[in-house]
Image (cartoon, rainbow, N blue to C red; front, side, top):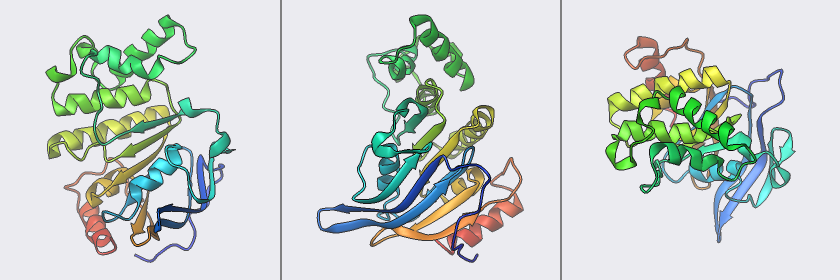
Length: 255
C-alpha cells in the first residue's frame, strides 16, 4: 500500500480540519505537524502503536486538550471559538456510567444542562435507548447490566444530544469478540441512520478495516502521520471475508 501525499478530495467542506497541529508534554514532543480533514458522514480510524499520540489527538479534536501549535476547525469554526459542543459527543474507553443512577438517568445526564424542556429530554432519552436496543432496561442499575449492555448505554448517552460528530477512544476494546462484533454492527447501523461523522481510536487493525472509510496510520516519537489508507470494501464487512482478511494482512505490514 503506497502512502497518500494528500487526503482524498471531497465536495463538502470538512467537518473536522487539522493543519500542522503539534503538542508537547513538558519537553517531550508527542504530536508533530498533524494535518487531517474528516468529511461529513465519514468514519475515520486513528491506528498505530501505543505511544503514537492517538488519544492525545482525539482529545485535541474534542477540545479537552489545547494544541501547542497549528489550527483545529470544527464545523467551520476554530476550536477555541467553537459554540456548538453539543454537536460533538465523546465515547470513552470506559463506559463511565454513574452507579447511583438508573440507565435512564445515566442517559439523561448528557442533557441536564441543556435548554430543552423536560418532555423533550424524556423523548430523546427514550429514543436513544430505543436506537441502541436497550429500551427495556431503562429502570435497571448499571451493576445489573452485562459489559455489552453497558457499552450500549454509554453509546446511547453519547447519542442522546443528537451529535453530528462522534469521537470514540477504543470504546469496544474491553468487550469479548462476539459482543465487540455486535457493537461494530450497531455503530455502522446508527451512523448510517444519523449520518454522523465518526473519528475513532483503535489498536485493532481488523476493527479499523471493518468500520472505517479511511484509516490514518500514526507512527511514534513524535506522533505523526505515516500514511492514509482508503477502505473501499463493500459493507457489511465480515471478519471471515477473504477481502477483509487480505486488507487486514496488508495493513498489518504498515502499522
